[in-house]
Image (cartoon, rainbow, N blue to C red; front, side):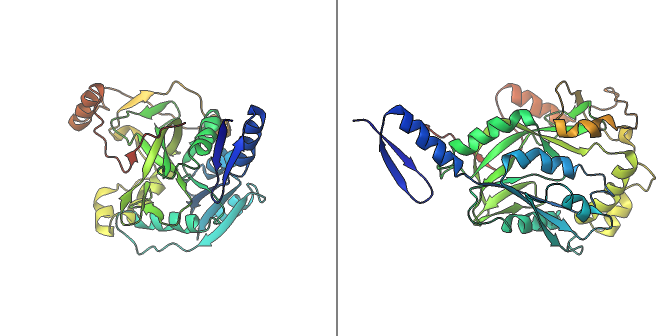
Length: 326
């Protein structure tokens, strides 16, 4: 008689089919998968981060979410406490403001949240304070976590990116911004945040093996009021550079001049996640895009040509793997 073999983290089950038992066991095994979200935040109100929307966008996919809340100058802690006390667990942290190179402090805070995940979680879903997942992608993400749960060669899942700039109506040209990044990883403590917390590595600086999903991260880090964006520029550059560099390169102003920044953009023709609808409706500044002024650099033009030829020229902090499914 035909048999089916199922593996969990600790046991192997061999079952004679009929099909109904085959399906029932599959459902039972799937129900045991545990997913924990994790993120970090500091001064979310001062810098107008959509952290509440970010966390709420992954809550339906997670059993719990760990938030490393840094020492803030506003009511960020109360803001996070108000989201979902049953599923959101807070770790209060102190940022090392002496770290002024490569955005390293952001990776350290990411790791603090990741280390707070309990050992019984299978997957860790990372979301930054200005990133949001569309509810239309929830099913795709959930199915992928189920599908690759027992594929040990798969370290994580790779997402596409939509980078909004200036308003909610424009996104960055794919050749000008990073097009993909890892946002779901296995809950293995050999994993760690890499450089400025953009991606992840494991062990001795090894790239992760990932599967690319047909799902996107909506990145809203460059859509803030001009006043909040200016505050962010003056503060966050200090996590990458010393005071002299900041003084020479970051203009002092009351508000950020979006139009003065040379960004190649394209119109956004999709829909925003539901959790973002109120924020989108509250947009209270004008943004005018002049395509004649904002253009692709020579480097980005070359990337665009290569992409048409099927050659991916962007830096990849991961290895894409193909997994055969039975």
